[in-house]
Image 1 (cartoon, rainbow, N blue to C red):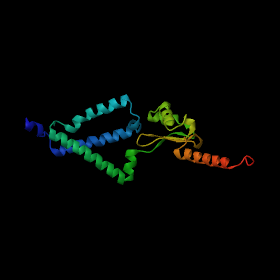
Image 2: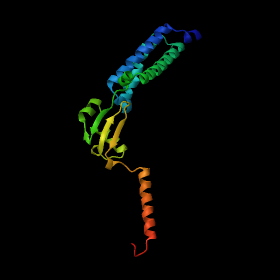
Image 3: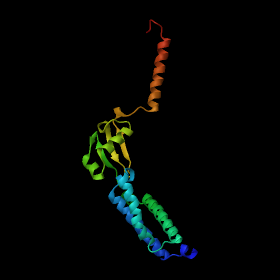
Length: 190
């Protein structure tokens, strides 16, 4: 029993190579599919991700279902990912390939239907992002973009931005100053 649990059916080098190749393939496939999937995951996307992990499992483990093989595969996956992240941070072209570039979805209040369609986003997705940032509609924005990590970035027009705590504090300070002036002024000075 113990022997079957820890004895590997394939060499360690094959296990490592299988894992690295599958990892690299999945990274490229996810990059090609698009950045929308990273942040805008829906039920269908989740099912695909779960099934994808099951599909590639046999390619990683091969004919080996030992605990030792699983640990080697897990360590290889983590090390490969850490190495790729470090390499992408150091080498700009790789970072750009893996991360991609922002995609403008609306500019100066005008919605870009073609860009959204290409990414598989609906206008409702963009409208929700605008509302979360304090706007009412796309027309209230100067820029809406889908960032490489999958988040929607919204820049509101200056008049549409919500007041900050500093804005409110400044208004309150001015009101207090006016009240003090009015309280100090006599009836003839008012």
